Image (cartoon, one colour):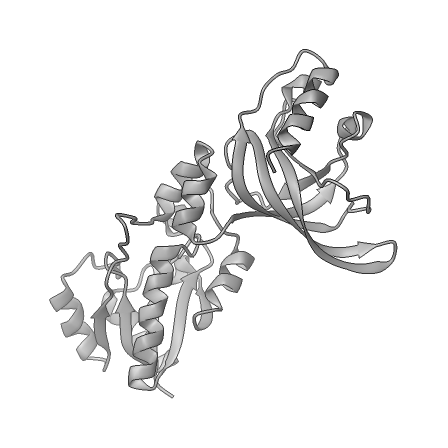
Length: 291
């Protein structure tokens, strides 16, 4: 069966990407072709400049999000980057039976340099592919981009970032042992270690939904709980490295070594230094009123 494909790194799988995939799905139905989403194992900048930005989505998250829109296939960017536009299109036609290629409104490919849409169309025609240039997403002056979302997260504007993403920004990681300071003051926390490639938002206290999938007392546990999350060094207790501490009100299960996913909803305040643990405790009590 012939296919229509689109290609990109799609970090974050944000609203702009989703609009592209809606067009992909529409064309797939129109041409009675299967929809293919090609993406890369590595961020292109990491290969081209060796300066990969912190990512909005891990490979696993990206695969799961992209899987909603078509069959997902990962390329090694280092292997396809040397290919000319003709070589790459010939590969798509021969290996994947691609008959239509839906290109993002600002996407280019090929080691032989950027070409005009007319030049792409002429090269593609030689291998039996028709190029379609996608329409850009624009709604209420919102023009999402992965770079814009990274910049918003870097300053803690989680709500604006979420509007561009179309979902709550996620942090996932294994629960590890901390210093248990929270337990001492009556607010036990689960400390998570996210993937090292993942962008961690600006330090501060956040409202989140904690998604728990694991075991509790030997029984399978799957639930969602409102949580209070502190991202930062926790200066009140003298930490020097960044931690992500999650307090789930009313939850008493053992989460150590289990996976925990956070969906960040809002940033309540900046991280601050308190003169004592009593002051910190009072502030946490206030923070809990805002979740």
